[in-house]
Every structure is written in structure tokens, then in C-alpha cells.
Image (cartoon, rainbow, N blue to C red):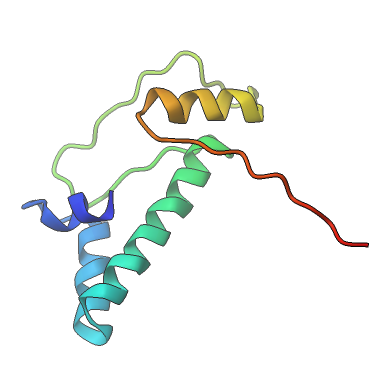
Length: 99
């Protein structure tokens, strides 16, 4: 995802973020920083059900999703199904606690 943002011709907040990091630290670190930022945004979109708007894009899109309601919450299985529908591979890791 970060690579696609970097290759876009339009200037967005995310691309500006990458260019700023790239100038200071290099392209590889910039890509990793951008990927992490995108993951944080996805977390807020899925778990906290917030909307993402980029002020630098000329026409922000209106998202019409009647499923999402401010009071509605997604459980883990619904989040996994949403990610799989979007084309991502999801693996479940079992956390083992020592003790």
C-alpha cells in the first residue's frame, strides 16, 4: 500500500509525509514509516470507525456505508472478514504467556 501511495502523481498528506522522511532519512526508512502510518490509519478506520479525509485532495469522497453507525461496533471476526474481502491475507497468531 505504501508503495502505491509513493507512486501516485497526486500530492496527498501521506505522500508529503513520505517525501519529508525520505529527504531526512532516506527512501527505505521513508517507506517503512509510511507503511506504519497507513496501518495506524487502518486501525482507526476499522476499530474506532473513524473516517479518513485528506485535505490536500481536491474533491474528498463521501463514503456511504449504511452498515457503520457511530454506536455500532465490529467484533474481531467482522474485522477479519472485511480485510479478507479487501484482498488481504489474515493469519491468526496465538499469544502464549509464560508463567
